[in-house]
Image (cartoon, rainbow, N blue to C red; front, top):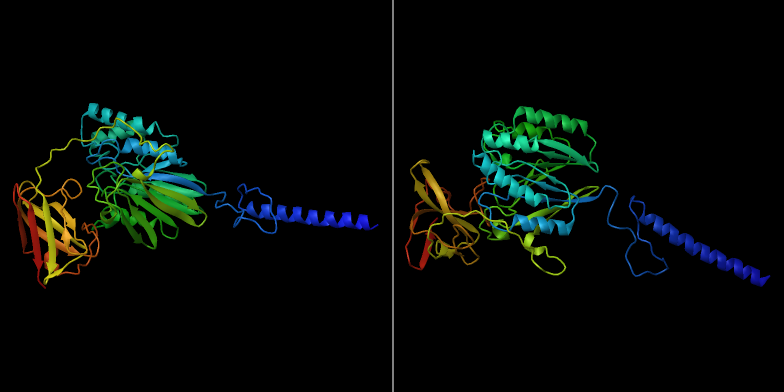
Length: 424
């Protein structure tokens, strides 16, 4: 009798343990994705069996500007690196070819090169046009012949994707017809958990948002959760509008001085993980994506050859009332009479903690051409390119070419050491 009771007791304990094990496994599978299978005991060397995923979770990549003076062996290597990461698909924000041509043979050559790289991707690629791609009526017609629509939408795992044309009929514009198209797409997909918007230019920084169509387009997004991605400026910057995040991406091979994170100048892809409560956005530097054997991907991609002026080395110091000024952006401008009749910035620099700076013209900290320059200084604590108006911590007169009193001369074949002294 005692043996029978003992056997029954053992069965109850074992059965309870099995039931407990099954219960915990079931908990790990509630999200709708396969849970981790493991033997569960009273004490276990892990924190949880619930994986960090759900049925609607997915990952995709966004590539930014490739052109505007593209550099060799960058975008083509980005394609290879994206294949290493294996996103579910890739979206662009435009400027895919150099464009700015009316010659069919040039268009054909540039698109053949670009699509040759895209054909190597192991996942879908979604095109979005930029100003280089749609410069004129010839390039517009060529795009239509190759790709059809210049704006469109799609849905994936309860997320709506809007691919917008910021060059709609004319530069930096979203026409009413396009807005109506997206208004309907949004109405037809009113229950999606998130909306992702992709376009080339950051139209929201323009002076007249009614004129360029952004005001009307943005109104269609009211009342929903969304995220916006753009390119064009070749400098990374985050904006917050209407409580939503807008990201201006840097480059994926496009023209850049590549001065690093403090300037927002780097080659990258944006990696987006869509979660139930919204996207998680990470910027992945291309140089940080390496294969298991650490061999750098190779390619034959050629860059644009530019005519460069001879540069002179320049080191400088910025002071205000005799004290070093940190976090100030210094611009070096020349007046161009024909055809613009205005000042053009040739080089700029960001001051370090001790007020020192090294200007850049074509590449990182490469110097300035010899000549006389009108100098502007704006202190915001970080690099400032004037894209969005910001209040300077220094006297306003130094921020504009029309009012500044600062002048410097860069001499040829000399080590130029410049001291810029401000007075309140």
